[in-house]
Length: 246
Image (cartoon, rainbow, N blue to C red; front, side, top):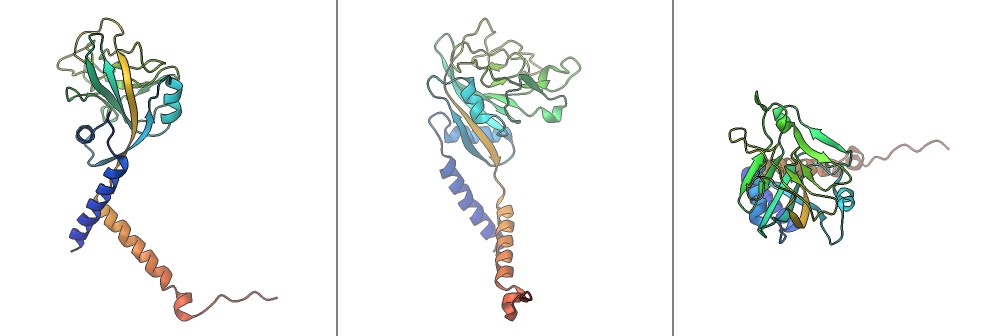
């Protein structure tokens, strides 16, 4: 009975979360499910921190997302051939405006990844190998003069105006077996010049969803607290605190 109740509570909670976070024209339910699978940490809840508006710049991006924890950045990207792709990246750390790279020396810290939701492809940070020891350490570039930037290539670069002159030069998020340096996240072609124009862009904060058993324990704890308050010694015995001497 307890297990059934826990599952019931968990199902209701997930339903509420789904309705609360909602899909958008840019990030569909199918996209959210795919990102959750790639992340590999179980169910997630997303909170939108930022949606690009006409005329906005990197200043607006950083004002909305800096210091907010791990995020997905999703954007429409068009190459010089007019081909439209939905791409982005997962940043396991907070964005900031320090003018520095977030460096992840050890493999267990290299948990960022880039994705192409149009082709359903994902590229993780390059792990340490004998020949490519530091290549994958450049997780993100954080600067007030640029939008979201991943890798040292830069593997995905968004400029100041968040629209014109973007590019993708894969370097820190490559497959070490393929060594696909200099290719584009969009279409896999070798980089020639800045050729990406960005359209819609959204940044989503990522939260883990506790399992049903965790919520059952929380509910039980609240019930215990409520019971203890109702049947406190002072109330059950009809006693009151001594009055201070006047």
